[in-house]
Length: 138
Image: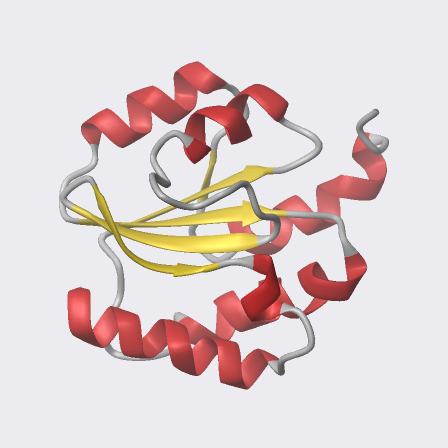
């Protein structure tokens, strides 16, 4: 059962405010992914406090560097079920994980941070991993 939208809205806005396109259903995911060329940062947002509370600040910090992905999209696991399922079809080779973040280049996942790689780490450490991936692939 999804959480009430009034609880989730601020968490959605954290990524939208920094330029992520929020995808709320499967059709939006497919349209966006089909239209995007180059690098796409896919953030699978989550309400989970143990990892998501670190995840969103880390993503924000990672985007302060010089190298940037061409596009940024987000889906919200546990809330927008169809959108999340559609996004996960593009994360070939990785099990469902939320929160998680993937860098896709020309349709292939070139970098992925799953929940187990986020949980228990600091936001600056996660941001550093993302910035290294951006420097290599963007």
